[in-house]
Length: 519
Image 1: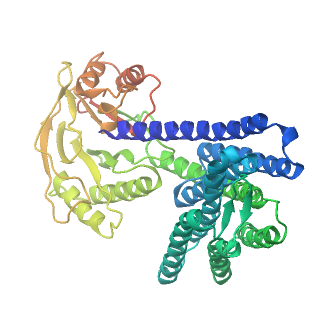
Image 2: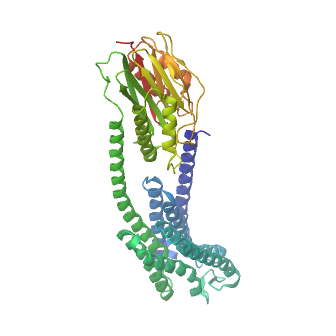
């Protein structure tokens, strides 16, 4: 599966899961509403109505939070995963609590009351464990300590869930009599331990690692820590009022709001830094055309369209001395900021090695030296495909070398463009001590060289069809004698017409060079 297909597939699956989950939540809310209507409000005690109303409020709040989390691009990674787990468990907690109040006192629905209360007891345990995992993901904890606590809490949760099943046969935590009425069991307080222990673990970790937490995180953490403890005490003393899931949902709402404000500020700063990096990258690449208008031996034009704010492609051209011009085009693996930084390093090294070269060195040797330098400290495992050509302007002699890059295209004597294929070499920064292949071409007056990155040939439609080499040649051959800017525009226009509204997944970089003959 190609990269574009993979991204589209994952995005589609995520949207489908979000839609299904949303429909389930809306269905749960509808079930509670229908249940109240079927039983009749007049037949429900005021305390029941109060509890059901609080649980419906918690479910609606949870549904809106879930939709916000899914659509909020600021949230990602492990933090979001455990926050959504916590949110889902709390919604089920509220749903089963509402159902238990609706069917309480109805003998025909006794089994349903038992099932609802069993799931309710289980959700309170899972909710506390999910919050522990959520906080542990926010902090950089001592691995040994985190592993020990996590193992203990995992077994506590497992044992608690097993005891919930045992309760069905023993009634140690709760029971439902023949009239369908719920009663607390003799060991009801023991059932709260599995909820209390993860909260205490969170309190311990939040205290010893308090320096890692931002003020807003401390507030959110301690609210969640203290609220369940106070709720446990309250519900134990005051029988008949269920506030646990509603209060937890309010705390999750507060956590989300505080987190969103803080991460919004962080995202604004990151966006500003990215904008600055993009501007720096654009200014580093030559962008003033015509280049050296006083030199009549050549015309040159290049463009780079990044797929993101910053890209991994680059082009370059510069005079080595009065009679030699260097032409470079390259593509760094990956995208975004890491690729852009590696691109800056690669561009600098290639330029320094080329300008410092004496002409007993050729492009193959220059790339070999750059390769060895890039291999040093390349911990991220990035690599660069590159094409380097050096033109002797007085004779039109072009000597070039390629490091795994796309084959160049030539137009000779005003004839159609063709691809010049030769033995290629591995990309730069893959392995020290590599030797690189290249070739030589004698350029005559009017000959055109076109080099590009794979973003051109791999431009993709919404149906995952590639632009390809043949379409690129067709675009180049629209007018082989056109100015270099027009040749570039012809290819760019052909790509845009081909992909239409499909998103761009790769940087698109092109360089066109025409040799006009010696002065």
